[in-house]
Length: 249
Ligand SMILES: Cc1cc2nc3c(=O)[nH]c(=O)nc-3n(C[C@H](O)[C@H](O)[C@H](O)COP(=O)(O)O)c2cc1C
Image (cartoon, rainbow, N blue to C red; front, side, top):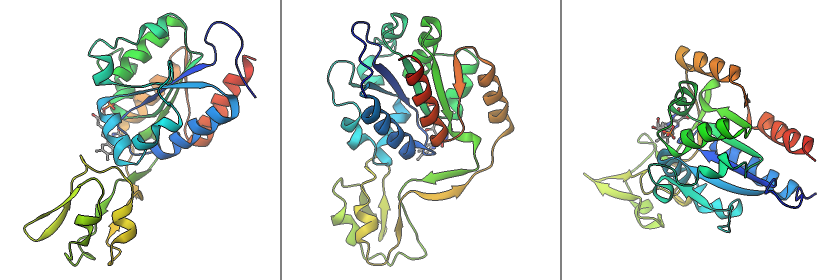
């Protein structure tokens, strides 16, 4: 099914990634299915933290599956857009049918609620609201479960150092006779996890987190904002995007 409706760019949607480990991998799968199902073109915008976290969770290296780099299908980072977010005019001009921010960190949610726009994601959110582009937001910190990036379990690790040579990105090095994983170099490829002879490396394990009262309050404020739809899970995200796109055709 194609949403192409002649002129006007209404088959373009924007996806905003913030620096949240919760839901980042599932949000990627949702956007990929939406692209395949509706034939939409997706521009991906990533905050500085979003770019880093997307890399750690293996999403950055797969971003071409969603935004292959053609016009309106670019990956736009803070470095590309600059401090003023030079691409935000697209939202004012109504080029996008929809802005999806998934996942949205507590930081980004708080800033949107209080009208702060000092990152690429908070700037496009503000411009989308001014330009009448609907926003769908999946806050990361509304549930008690998260996913942690790759880590070495010290209880199991025997310091054999095999992982150092296995990592294709040089993210593991030796320090004082123990292997150290540098998340700033990690691409979440899981080669270390798969090849560790002691099964001492874990990637994307589930972990429990407490929901802060301030986050609950901010999410409630977000729900009250005109033009914003808040969703609670990746499944709901997919349903709401599908419904929103379906309604316009
Ligand atoms: C591996 C990792 C996972 C993170 N996960 C979350 C998260 O689930 N929720 C959150 O609010 N912040 C999370 N953070 C912290 C944010 O990245 C940090 O607050 C950042 O400043 C958010 O910036 P942004 O909102 O502009 O993307 C995480 C950081 C790291 C390194």
